[in-house]
Amino acid sequence: ENKVELTVAHFNDDNVEIITPLKVTFTHVIIHIQGLSLFGILRDVRDLLFKPYPISAQVLLFYKTLHSILYIHLLPGTVPVEEVKKRNQCNKYIQTTSKCQLIPGRKYKPSCDPYGYQPQDETFEWDFGPNYHPAFEVLLGSTTENVRIGLLDENDKNVWDPRCVFVKANSTEAASHRTDAEAAEFVDGHRETLIQAVSSVIEIADRLRSKRMVGKEMYNEIENAQIPQKQMRKLYDALDSGGTKVKAEFYKVLKEKLQSLVDELEAGTSRT
Image 1 (cartoon, rainbow, N blue to C red):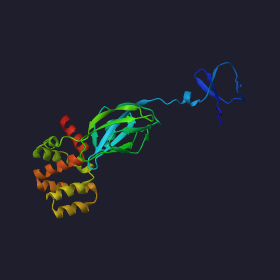
Image 2 (image 1 turned 90 degrees about the vertical axis):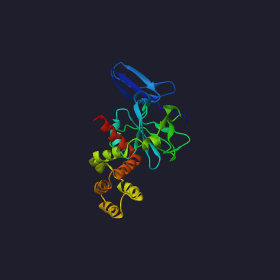
Image 3 (image 1 turned 90 degrees about the horizontal axis):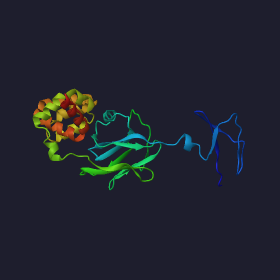
Image 4 (image 1 turned 120 degrees about the vertical axis):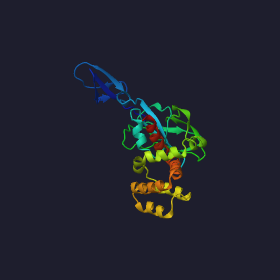
């Protein structure tokens, strides 16, 4: 039951050759080699040849406002953040200090008390896309504005030190960020981009209809369009008819449900 498996490693210049012993006793290992070289007996050759090393990695956070879920992505440090953001346009990107050292093939789990998360743990992999699936989702409350979050290895050791991240902006600040005229200008200026990017059109139309800003007939036209791009073009007809107030309300709904997309478009506008 207590057998020790021995492997002979034959070192020759820059090469390493694994040799099968002819005979193994309690005191000797008999091998056959040609020429002289350094050689060693290893209990587990994997420790030498396949020792796991940490790599430069990053922890990226995205927040889904509608369901109050914080998604955690574990990715190699060379993955461009912008590429991951393109896959998460419906979620808000939470910028924080993301750099860390992780070992491919090892399991990790978040530290986020008192909030629950799933799955229980996840293996870090060399993920270079194109999908960039989240490793974890942390279930926050609808009133949660900030959370203290970190990352632990298999031995419960911190590999990404806990830090406080803010998932929601102050409601007063968010509401006063733009005037109605500025919000309408944003909606008009990014018409084509929003038509292509927004997929939850019916959900937005429901909100506007509940405020009597979209009539029943127009709502039915939007619903019957079926394809999101066609639905958005119909919705824009309603926005153009409703004027500044309706466009401002549409902007507020976008800010709430697609904040990362709005933030990205606003950042692009400020740079131009």
